[in-house]
Image (cartoon, rainbow, N blue to C red; front, side, top):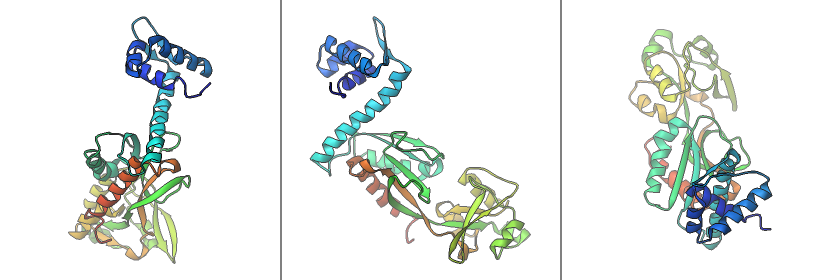
Length: 297
């Protein structure tokens, strides 16, 4: 028996809430849809649907299975389109993830702009500061900041990312300006999402554990505290570009900046030829390169 049999019928029933409505959608008889779903449950040895005279609802196993069936349907259609036309129109569901602050500020507006030109595309964006496993979570694309760690994924560099150690003039007037990395232990460091700051010394990358009387896992909050003169901060260029240019922050120890990291698009190997992924990544790369935060770097 074909292992695909019953999947389309199950999805239709789950989405319609009735066998009759699902049969109408698929152009099949009620009995045929019911038989295919029953045979699917028998093969899986699991009940997927609770049945009543008026409607059906999903079991817990059915909810999990529905999520994966939708992914299979999208992947099947994507494979057919990819073979037929690699430059085809983006269609179907694209699921992606990005860090919260960067996503809200940079990525989501560009995704929305992309969607406005491709009305057959559906997008689900999960903004999270957790590093989600794309393969486990069935995602097509992740926008990651910094250094890459997952070698199972295909990576495209979207934009540069330069880290700056800086402080407000008021803080430096009160506590002095550090002239070496060893002096950081004498300063109040505004800790963000990591207690370790990266630097370069003698041609190698160095991680220093810092401490202070203030901590928050938000780049905007760290920036605000630095501007108020609370202490030193280490933030990416897109946070501090304006304050550095107008003198509200002073760049410190530029000779020890960590090797330039980047903004990356990561996606599973099987997604790299998908029109929806490929064209969105190209759009993000082009539009990010036009932003003042990255111009001329």
